[in-house]
Amino acid sequence: MARKRKPLPEFEGIEILDVAAEGNALARIDDMVVFLPFGAPGDIVDIKIEKKRRSYAMGRITRIVRPGEMRVEAPCSHFTVCGGCRWQHLPYTFQLEAKRRQVVDALDRIAKVPHPEVAPTLGSQEIWEYRNKMEYTFSNKCWLTLEQLRSGEEFPDRDAAGFHIPGAFDKVLDIDRCHLQDDLSNRLRKFIKAFGKQHGLTFYDLRNNEGFLRTLMVRITSTGEVMALMSFGEDRPDDIRALMSAVKDEFPQITSLLYVVNTKANDTIGDLPVVTFAGRDYIEEEMEGLRFRIGPKSFYQTNSRQAYELYKVAREFAGLTGNELVYDLYTGTGTIANFISRRARKVVGIEYVPEAIADAKINAEVNGLDNTLFFAGDMKDVLNAAFIAEHGRPDVMIVDPPRAGMHADVVDVILEAEPERIVYVSCNPATQARDLALLDAKYCITAIQPVDMFPHTQHVENVVRLERKPAHTQGGVEAPAAASDEL
Image (cartoon, rainbow, N blue to C red):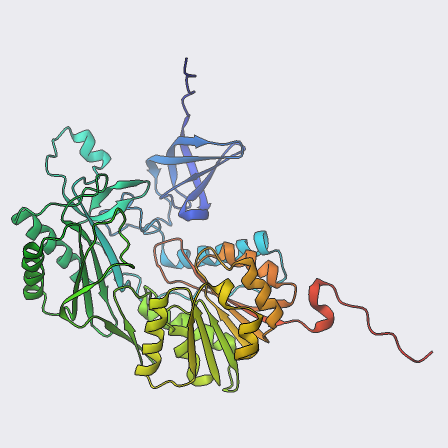
């Protein structure tokens, strides 16, 4: 006989104390710490506990009894349902300080190494419509909100164009307006959805992997160029041509109109041919007169204007004089490498994705840069003693790894290479702190600058400068002075 679960408690009149990890708010009930989304410090709320562990609990707010003075009105009608912007209800100045504290916490709790004061978070100039890239999903099973379910209404039309609901891979929230990209993105998504409904085109079934309209990616650069990439779940040339022609006529500002047919069980298109329906097969970004080509499969920082601020911090921390050999690890499409190349003797970039390296080489060529070299391959396999012997021991290393941080083998090679300075750019302060603890054997932290790339989310980019310790202090212990020959 199945064991009957004890019902989890509810509490009334609980004060939200602060924000915590993963964008949650924090409350305390007796000795129990409770994490819950969408709370603001100072709120008095009723809480329903949904998951209880020995040292903490997860819950949700069932009612805001009295909003705190810090709470602001979230402009998005999808706030609390979409899951994308968990901090829209918090003042931007508070968001920036919370992100700085997130970096401090990771350094103190995980790295546990000496470090200077963490600088105030560098805020984004635009806090709305700042994203240059958005991805939408078409689905025949839209997510119904609690209000819709409680209404008792029937919803026979479940076609949606929007975002995946966290924790429900086959459910998509139909989006009216997203505030994170230029409104052109909303108009384009709605047009395609309406065209599909009008012409009887099937929306994708994420559970059964069937249907025609699948995904839409929209990229809008700071230079005003627009890329739209439509993904179709079925190869139906006539319907593809009809939809793409309608988009081309309705949105003449699109400079790169592309499509891909994806009949696989996942949404990735890295191994699929992309067809150029109209315009070019790339768009361009610009920084300090340098132009960067972005293809449909290219990675580029999602906040263009703030990426410029991030790269300026990295360049400043690198302390370049024009004579340095720089290694740029996890170079992506070579944006940082090409950006700093005018102030270095030579820059060597390494990246796992071959297509990204191809873009990096094109970007160097387009900008007339002849002092950059790019190599594709797994970092822990490419960056080894033989590679360094062939290309030279770097004076400066810039590392910008994915969220998982650096492989231990890569850290070992960096320690063996012993560059004078390391600039570590990270989108995950926790894994960055783990790696900084390993680098502490030979390096000390001399500067820390958080940068906000994603307003209204809990995510923060962090840049750390490390400088090589004197040989007699490496390993964390100062070596004894050499014995004197004199008696």
